[in-house]
Image (cartoon, rainbow, N blue to C red; front, side, top):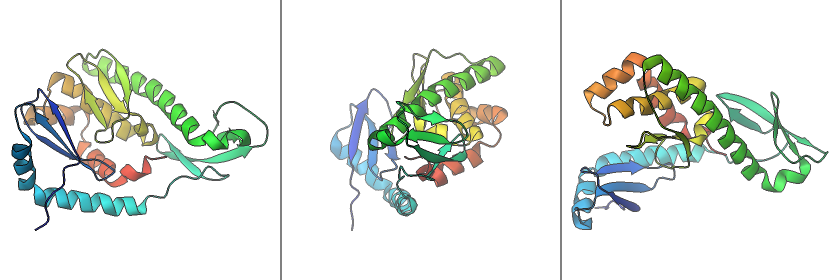
Length: 224
């Protein structure tokens, strides 16, 4: 009988145990301080079938992922659309976007870092604007929008009213980005996944089930 391996345990003041599998197929468990490792292990083993199923799904998705190459014609996502990379001979000090990505030949060695920084800057601006739009429209209140590097969550929020959104979502279609933003805004009102939460979310974003499925099926597209 194969036993489930826990890759990381994160303890906090929470009262429940959360089991998450990130896109690297690592099993992350969030647990209360009061639970010892044996108790956590027993809880995880009870979810063995579900964990194995999810890890198999992610393994299959990861097989389809092809790492990006920073060459002429390579396609990069931005707000759900693909745009080609064009390598320039002249020397510039930044990435330029104008219905295509333009990058100087002298910057290819650090192209991945340049792209990530560009995506993060765009994500902060776009997500902040959209969060203000939905807050004004539906009466939400938040403190700050922050960009997240989390590997296990698309978004989260804090008791201080801060909202954290994964920067890679700037590559997703706009309606998917909106879903994650609205999801976290609703959590500021209802900090759980109760029936009341899903009912409130559905009023604002009726297609949330389809959005969740899109993220589950297409997570590998949002990589660089």
